Image 1 (tube, one colour):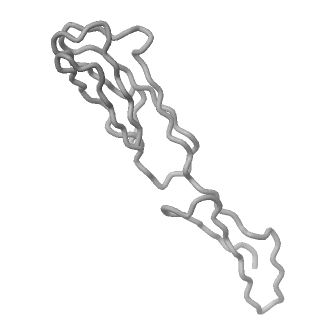
Image 2 (tube, rainbow, N blue to C red; image 1 turned 45 degrees about the vertical axis):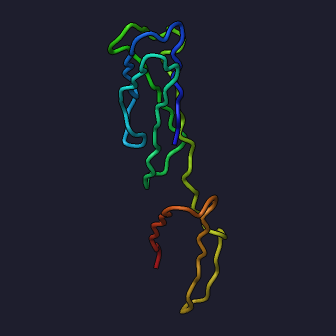
Image 3 (cartoon, helix red, strand yellow; image 1 turned 90 degrees about the vertical axis):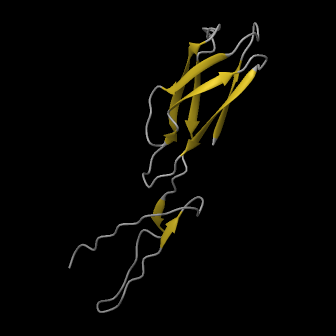
Amino acid sequence: MATLEVLRSGGVFGSVSISWRVTNPTSDLTPTRGLLVFPEGDTSGIITLTATPDDISEGPETYSIALSVVAGEGRVASTGAMATVTILQNDDLISFEGSVVQVTEGSTAQLNVARLGQAAGKGWHKQQVMGG
């Protein structure tokens, strides 16, 4: 989960509504848009984003969040109109514990598969026996 604090400065008279959106949305980060309301006197608000786990092996994912004024006497500062959120890689590598296994004809070979990293969530291994 990511929380972004949005600050209101330069005056707190009247209510201001700020629209926000993820400029490059995917299903990995939700929600992708919303409305943040600053009642009179409030100087900060929070946007909460959730990283949705999936079964796709991928590296870090970076998203941009943009602000724009919807209603009220306010404007978005040119230096604070964008924020960046990065979902760090949490996909684990799966590999064989050894690269060579020898077995005599008519015997059974045991291949150990290791999951590197954290053991939380699903891990997938697809195998195919080749040769004959």
